[in-house]
Image (cartoon, rainbow, N blue to C red; front, top):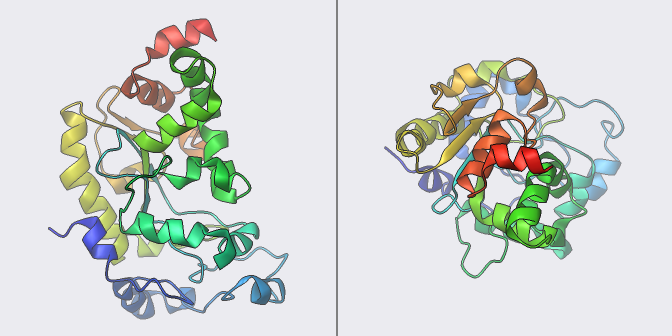
Length: 268
């Protein structure tokens, strides 16, 4: 079994496009329509005919997100389908903003000395789509943590989440909408993600060491529910992927972070 981090070491990180070579070969054979390249940088993006339109392509010139956070130390793993896309993503990944540098370090799982190991909770990137999406999803949890553990400090609560929350995407490439369901069964990076969850993380969750919250594609991830430790979102919960403090996922997260979720609801 190949470790997921070792799998991703095969992808060059110098650009201008970023796609795992095994994925590229598979897509070229099975679904070549997904391979036409999106614009390579911000300047070419704003001049591209797709600017301002609904665009179903994968954006291979944006850095992929197969996982995020400190995989070795995280207590909570959020399972997703694929990272979304917003026009600001091309702006954010320009070299002067140092986001790409953090993404490369995260891919290699180099987090030594970082106050925010999972950069999506780092206020230095508060203007990015990634921070805004994750902060919104975790806002009520962060508010509970701030109140009950950190004397009201929301910043300290975000640091706690950054240390303890990791994410895994089944398909790591950015897209505005998802229409690549035919790739899920055979895409090498999707197989690597599922193998990592089933062989490494699921046994730890069943031993109550970590919590896993499956927000999308429950059937494809293939995990059985374990109360508070493996939480599968179905129907309405899956559509919204809500992680509020009162949701099943939110309660599991609070429990892993040392907060009684039922007591937290009484105090809010």
